[in-house]
Figure 1 (cartoon, helix red, strand yellow):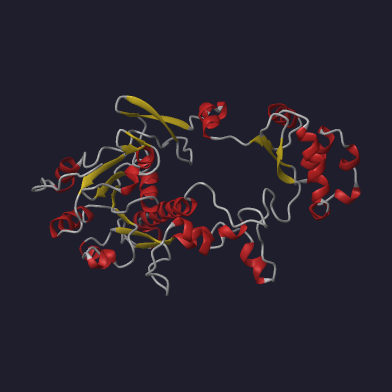
Figure 2 (figure 1 turned 180 degrees about the horizontal axis):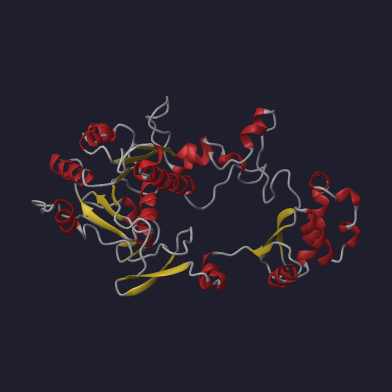
Length: 399
């Protein structure tokens, strides 16, 4: 097995559900020893969505490469054990409501007083400060409050959502990146005159700000009085770029919003009149006539099967692709050729999970095992990290 970039890094994950744990998944995928602390009843995610033999398949994916330790943080014994583990860690990840760690005596200040090199990654709905810091935060609410929902869906319908927890995933990515930045800064050595193995710091991640970070030009446009709204299957100010129905009942996305792509698409459609129209040179002209272009492309696509459209536009070097569902992804030859579908074993059966980007040439990440059973590593971790067992560990109370 090739080494991974985070081999030797110890991460204590105190969070639950999605945002904090997804950050832990990313770090574990690239080699960190991530110890997930769960209450006796287990992380609630273990029972969310599709459940197989008492455990959700989502947990098998987000819990991969982690070790499960059961501690009841509502008790003094559990908090004391968590503190000892934190003092042996490089990174601590938590996504409780702000103030929870402080109430438990596990706040960053007291932990770093004993272990100055500790990095504490805190994920919450609105961040650790500000007038809304006390509010509970879920991805759905963060997507609304931070503006993403205002541009999802059709103008004449309620704001839509993707059938995913995007706000949580975005925050998890930001939390993992924050942990890596803090590790780099801590361990960069004498670049700025500090000795190697310097101080850690607190990484404060808000779900709302993680969503805010992907809004492209929405804020500067609004600052000039232009507020972007919902645009259905199109994107404001760029044309042609849309989703088109096909003869066989599928959907194809075609993006031909550059000069060359637009001309090649029109010629592939046998529409040289549009390809050579001086009024359609440049994006502003195409945006002004976007309805006309969409009608032409839509009628052309509706007379053909999806696979034929993609093959034709591939030969013409025009970006296009069929809208694929998860079943299509499992069979996708590109994903398979790239190794983007990995298998873990659950109860002796293979289970497909998605590989995590980015792809590193020499030290790639990998899925080593599926999300483990509740408390499977409690005694092993206590012995390895602390050189001791846990007296009367709490009994797992999973479903």
